[in-house]
Length: 157
Image 1 (cartoon, rainbow, N blue to C red):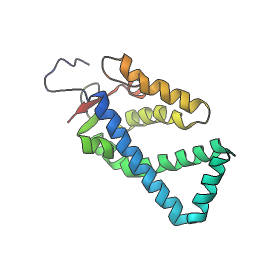
Image 2: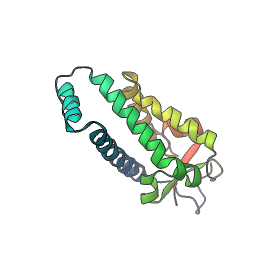
Image 3: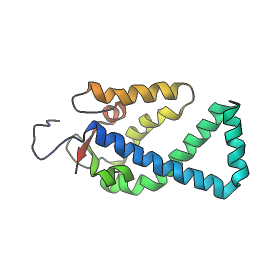
């Protein structure tokens, strides 16, 4: 990818970070309200008491992460396939493109997010997430590992 073109500008690391934060806030709020709606306040109190006592913390974190992924997919699938954006990327006017500056196909997006979702696997997920996240600082093209695996870039719209 030749980023000398004036037409294409990579999204800054901060824009990517804030788009991720927006996505996470939306996902967590929806997950919280879904759990509250389905199970009531007693279930939420039960989970927090287990977390405070550190009993099966990995199990609950895995389930909460899995619920987050389901919500992420449901909320973002149309935007990802039609525009190469999540809700956070849409709000901040950045998008995912392939090496030809085009909308990535479904296979490319699947590869990108399968690599990205390794981060929810208990024990190794946190380490992978850290490595994936900091990789953006050591890459001129501002790519994380999931971008490199799928040959994608995040650019300003």
